[in-house]
Each structure stands twice: as structure tokens, then as C-alpha cells.
Length: 353
Image (cartoon, rainbow, N blue to C red; front, side, top):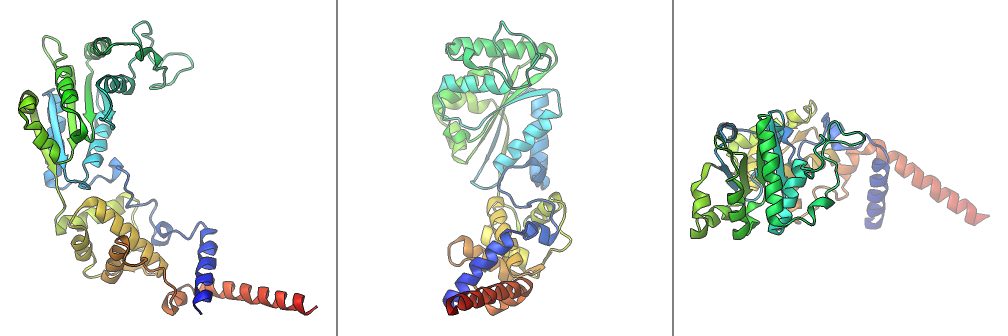
């Protein structure tokens, strides 16, 4: 019986995988995946605290105040807020650059900033929007390789001044900034000194884990720490915000008219995740998969608990063969059994002859 159950599980999995309709998004009526771990700004959930902080950061950028800081524990949504900032700044008259790997050398970070901003060599001042046969943001970067650090900074300064003359401001966002060396942090502080007689040319936003705050308190970074005008710490969500967060992501994914959460489900999600958005996403994604496997429109507390345990490797999230499970899959089990029966008869007749 165990071997037959295992074989039937494999057969059903292949049968369902062959049909594109057998994904839980379509089963529940979602238009896209609601609980991806990618930092999609369209799914950013803002409670009052984080909305006020985002507005304050944007205000600081418009006022050209120099530095801002976003810190938080792992999985609390820092990178999603980072991408939301980029999304909002793109709608304004602001140039942006994003450094996602700050563990580069000082010179390589400068090259990365120039590349992300779309800076071209001085002898090539043709706009990438008007240059024949080129696309914005796509150009040769080999010219940077032979430049010294000073030459790279000079070219950045020229670019910033050109943008300022056209009433455009530039923002640099440094993600995973807790990994930035002390020397590079000091270099970035010096970059913020690029300015005209009347205004700053570059705003820098640091995004990092909690230890970044401790690093900034070091005596060698005192000048940098004093120039940070806006600080925000992302935190785990409350029980109430956890439910709002889940409903927000479902709505952002197009809504799920055939998806319901049972009594105690949201409380169970909060208990297992402690309100950390990344863990909430993992648990909800696994719970929807488990609910789909069980053909349940209601995500119950039992399903949540089972999903959370499966993420810890304690069980497989509801994929074991059982008669209750197979009953809900009867429309697919019966054809599978008939197929096996026909195959057995065919083999028997072949051997008999």
C-alpha cells in the first residue's frame, strides 16, 4: 500500500503539473503571487508609522538635507521600502543610483555609481535618449577602467552640476550598508560635499541592519553621524497590522474572491512569524499551497500551523497521501486509477500471448 501511495502521489503531481490551471493563484482567484519575497514596491504596506517616515524621507530629499538612514532587523521590509523610494523618486525630477553590493572597493563603488546614473565620458555628451541606435542606460563602461579615483569623482561632480543646471537632483541609495567599510563610509561622506554655492548636489540614503547604527556611533564616523537628518527603523508588525498586511498584499495581487481565512488564522500567522513581513510571506505562501492541496477555500488555523511547521522541516505541509486528501482529488484520482488498470491489463495480455 505504501509503494502504491507513493507511486500515485508522483503520478498525480505530474498530472497536475501538466495542467497550467493547477496553481493555487488561479484556484483562489489571484491574478499574481501575493507573497513573493521579491521587494516589489507595488506590495509595500504602510502603516501610519512607516507612511510618516517615508513622507519625511521624501521631504528631506526635496529639501536636499544630505543624509537619511533606514535601519531594521532582518526581514522587516527595508529593501522593499528602498525600492518604493526608487519608484517614487522616478516620478519626480530626480536621478537615482542604487548600490546593492557595498563590499566593493572604493574605486569600484564609484564606477558603479557612475554606471547606474548613466554617466558618459566627457567627450561623449550626446544624450542616450537621442543618440542613434542607443537606449537609455545602455552604454560602454570601459572608459572608466583607466580612471583614477580622483578622475572618477571629478566626472561625477561634472555630471551632478550638469543635472543641477537643469534643475535635477541626484539621490544615491546604499543597500546593505552595514557591510560598508569605515573607509568607504568616509568617502561617501566626502561625496556629499559636492555642492554649488547654493545647494547640495547629492543626497545619500543608507539602508542597513541594526548594527549599522552602532557603526555610525564610532568616533571615526562622528561627522557622518551628525549629518544624518532623518532616521527610521523598520519593525515587526503588530497583530492588527499583520492582518492588514496580508489583506493588503492579496488586494495588490488582484484580490482572491475564493479565499477566506478562518477564525484564529491571522493570530496564528502572527504567533509563528512574530510580525516579521518576510516570515509572514513564507507562511502565507506555504499555507495557500497546503490549502490548495487539500482543496480548501478556507485557510484555517490548522493549515497555518501545518504550513509553519513544514517551513521548519517538521512535516511536508500536507503532501502525505491520505484518504481524506485523495477524496478531494477524486476527479483526478479516478482517471489515474483507470489508466493504471488499463496498463496492467495490457501488460497481462501481452505476457499471456
